[in-house]
Structures are given as structure tokens and as C-alpha cells.
Length: 490
Image (cartoon, rainbow, N blue to C red; front, side, top):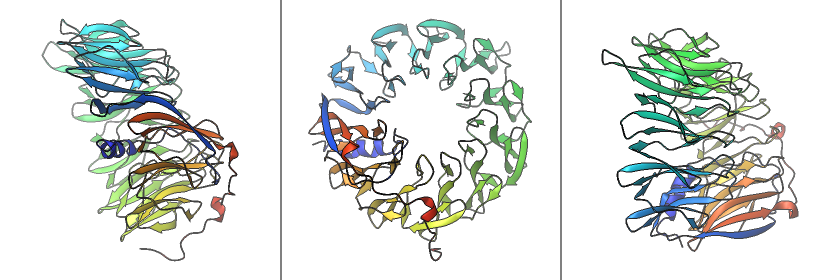
């Protein structure tokens, strides 16, 4: 049993969002489940916080402590021993075929890319892969004290400084940008964006982690500061200067045609979309969210300690609390949903109308089926949690994964992780799969008829696969048939 680590790891892995993005009609059939042993883990020696699963949910990697040294272990194969390994390393490339991490030997650091060392350096930041996995970049402090940006093993530029979280590739992997700094003759420092090797205009500062590419890769956007004023820079064009910009970064719409951010003037906040200011609010709490078709936008605002959702300029009912990751739009962009809390109840609100009230409703992640016709979420009563699928409560459990129930790509199945006592199951269409000590938040569908995940049992890690072709999908109850509560629960 994983008794020494199961609680810590379970709480940590529940906090991440499930890799699978779809499921559909519930069906009483998990089909045949098969196990493949990936590794036997020494729970006294592994660093559980380093554990990573590849994006395709087929491989695992973690750091193993052996005396005074550490190794990276990938699918049970130990790497070279080092004095230390970077604990926040993601290890895997997006295509799951490459491994990268940083390692310390004595006083020096190395970037280890696919088993090959690059360095030595005085200091290193974890490598970043391009979306196509063909390029890898990182920031390093050289032995002579200068800071260098390295791409595919080659030092491309040297700077006085490079912002640690700024290295970013475009979605097509063809472009690369980061934020660098320079110490001026007077001793003060300026910051600027380096885009495809070309330095942009210097500013007093650039917002940390605000640099991003548009989805089509044609523009970059970021927050800049100059003479105590803040403004967005989009495609090299400076926007109006404001008292403050509250969003983490300017947000591009999925079609790359729009950019939105939160600005402030005279202690009032408002949304700016394509340079046009919208209605003012006392406070805007969340980053604006575009719908998949880029036609709608929503955010969370607050007035007199009451929170409300604004979608396309229309403010909804006020609640005591609303998750800052909402509203959530359906993939067809026809529906929006969020959860409001008030008067001791949580209420599901869809398309501006209250539908269901529970003692608890978890933050919505991917509540809609891919075609937008169905809805599922995580709710609770007393000390139990349960999935609600098409308005119907499912079996209660001690805990359900925070990613909540998820639909398969074609909408035939729905899945979630559940815990009863010390035993975990993956529940598919209401039917529990094999019991395990721990199931990581790695459930991923391979089309509509199979899924896989990583699970632990008796200190061994398994890749578990379910063949769902033996199942018979239960007819779904479309959104059109769901009815709102008969009376207000507030």
C-alpha cells in the first residue's frame, strides 16, 4: 500500500486538470481492463513531488534519492546520478518522446536533454519545449556571470538578465520570444521583448509572465510599464496608458482576431477589447475568457463583496462567491455555465438561469459534452461527493477528482476518479473499474472506445487501459430536457 504517501500525492494530483477533454452518453460498462507494469517504486526513496506522467499518459518519470545523489527514472530506467535534480521539471515534451531536466553536479548546473548534458552553468531555469517538440530552450547564467538564452544547444543571445518565466514559442513552433533586461549607463535597468532575435522597445518594466503569442502566431502581446503607467502592447502597438491593468496577460481570442484585458482608471475597472473600453465595475476579479468561436466573452466582477458574471456585457445575478475560472463555454459556444454560492447553497447557472442547487458544487472544468448537448459536474451533500450527469445524481463517494466528470470525444462515455476509504476507482458510465491505492489525474481517451491512466497498487505503477467496446451506452438526457429548480434555494 502507498500509505505513507497516498494522502499527500492524492491531494496534489487532484489539484490538476484531467488530460482528456471529452466523453458522452453514460453506459454501464467499463469493458475489459488491462494492466501493464511500468515501474516498482521505492516509496522511501522517491521524491513524490517530482512525479510526472507524459502527455499521452503512457510514460512516467520521477526523481529517486540514492544516498546523497539523485537520479531521474523514466519507466523504471534510471538515469545518471547527480548531486541534485530540479524538482519542478516537467520532464516530457508535448509529444511524450523527449525528456529534459536540469541537474546539479558540485557547484555547477547542467541541462540534460534526451540524456545529453549541456553546460556547465552557474544557474539554470527548467527547459521549455516548443509545441511540436522539436525545439527546446532555456535561460542560463554562464560561469562568467552573463545570462544566455540557449535554443537546441546553441547560445543565441547574451543579456544582462532574462525574465525566468518569459520564454515562449508560438503555437506553430516557428517563432520564439522572451523578456530580457539591460543595465543602462545611469545604473537603472530596462526591459524589452526579444522576438525572433530582434529586440523591441525598452520599458521601465514588463509584466511577469504576461508575454504571449496569438493562436495564429502572428502577434505577441504583453503588459508594459513606463513612468508609473501601465499599458498593453499588442503586435508592437502600444495601447492607451492606464492606472493599472489587472489581467495576468492580454488574452487573445481563439481566432486571433481579438485581444482583451482588464484596465483601471480612477479606481474603476473595465474590460478593453480591441482597444474599446466597456462598462466600468468596482472590481474585475478574473482574466476574461473567450468562447471557442471567439464571439462571446465573460469574466467575474465584484460589487459590495458580491460577485457576478458578465457575459457579452450583461451582468448576472450576484452571489457570495463565484469561481475565477468561470464562466465556462460549451465547445459549440451556444451555452455558458458557472457556479454561484449564496445562502448556504451552491447553484449551477446555465445561460443565465439557475438550474440546480446542492450543498456543494465543484468549480466547472469541462462540464459540457463536445456537441454541447449534455452537462456533467461534481457536487456534494454532507461529507460525500457525487457526479451529476444530465441532471441525475450518481453514486456518492468520499472524494471525486477535482477535474470532475469528463466526456469522451464522441460523447458516448463519461469518466471520473473516485475514492472510497483507501480505495480508488475510475468510474466509467457509472461502473467502477479495478481498485487501486492511487489513480493519478491522467485519465485520457483514445477515441470513444478506450481510455488509459496511470495507477498505483502495492508500490507498483501500472498503465491501465479500458476497452469500452463491450459497453452499451445509456441514452443521454440532452440539455433541452433539463429543467430549472422548482423554487429558489436562496
